Image (cartoon, rainbow, N blue to C red; front, side, top):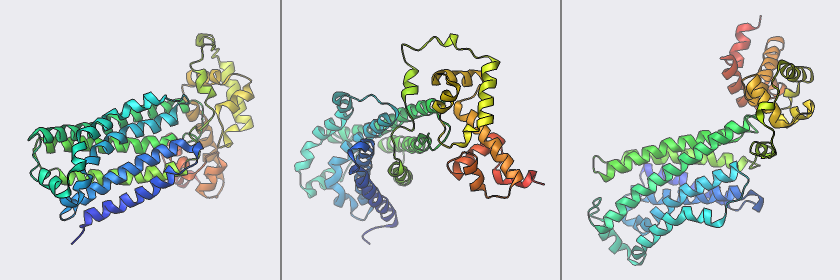
Length: 376
């Protein structure tokens, strides 16, 4: 038997990754962030193919030619993930040197394994056939780089998740819709990647310390990571913009010309005025409603409106607007027989999933159950 069921599943995932990675890699120049993610997926897919070959009968001998590329690829995946995150969450361009410094470990690993590239397949197989972690100078280098490469991926994704979380908290101050805050999905998938990579870290340490055979654990982690990254790649392909809304508002947060926040008047008059405009003009029915739109109605700077809502109502702009939408949806659910999707769209939500999630978070029940329980 040439392949077993484990390798077939991973090969299928690698094939999809290669295809979608190429689609992203050849995106237009305006979508440079997608090209970065495409390169990341391509490298991961190549690494997955190499790992899949090791799972096949005689796989060690068949995949030994790819061994020298394993660690440079691993050490490049983390920096690419962080670079993609930075492209999404900040406007300032990074210098070439600031980017290049993150790939120094990958370059060093190429130098360390450079002699292996000139050995024949049989010589390589013989060299590693009796692999023992930290057994000799070559195996010491291999063991250390193996551990460093996995820890590196985990560390880079951890930093990325923290950046994404901070960015999402900031965007919720200015945008009202999860489609605008699309990074919500990226954050969720990145967090799953983080958990899987933590499993990898544990598995690598257990294997290198020869406590037990972590082969099955490696396979499970690889499969979960593959499924997760393919799903994330689909989202990246569908994503049209790097920035979900105009960032000039956010940039005002750090502006040296911004007035002292202690001078912002957060009195009941301003709060009542905001509530009145939201209720009378029903601005929340626009699914792409941002704090810029509300600021124009109030004839006030956007960061001032944000501060009033945050401190006066003790809510983010996202929460504040979506509570109006949910109240409107509750009225439609009880007074009409239209479908849940129509209720969602008529209430200012961009899709049913976002409506269902937000409604349940605020009302603590689903729209369907709310209608069923309360409609006479």
